[in-house]
Image (spheres, rainbow, N blue to C red):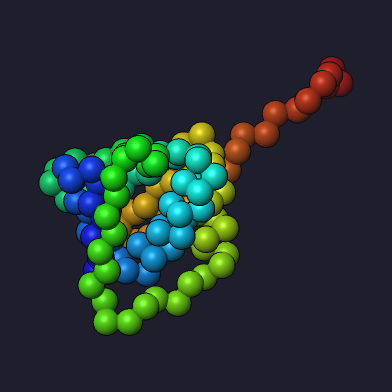
Amino acid sequence: MGRLIYRDRASFDIDDRILAHLRIVVMNKLRRNEGFMLQLPVNEGVRQASLWIHASNALVMQFYGGREPAIDRELIDQMMHDASGADGLTLTAAGIAPQAAPVRRPVGRTAS
């Protein structure tokens, strides 16, 4: 189990595997100067915390596992995609929250 520390004010326990993937997403987003919203589960009676991830906000990621987790490229791609969306990236106790399917509406005129 690893830990994400946000602005020296809040800390969140996150599975090392997910934290290793989140680290790559954060590095890539900040390298592009792109901020994003990150939702994390909280154990203290709060459903979730929303953090604005941006270069101006200090983050510390601590890994406690004995070996480095294997990186899953598909998971990185999913997390990057989610982080770029309107709702940001949502982590759950089990990992990454599935994104809701977009509502499709017809474009143009419809036959009556």
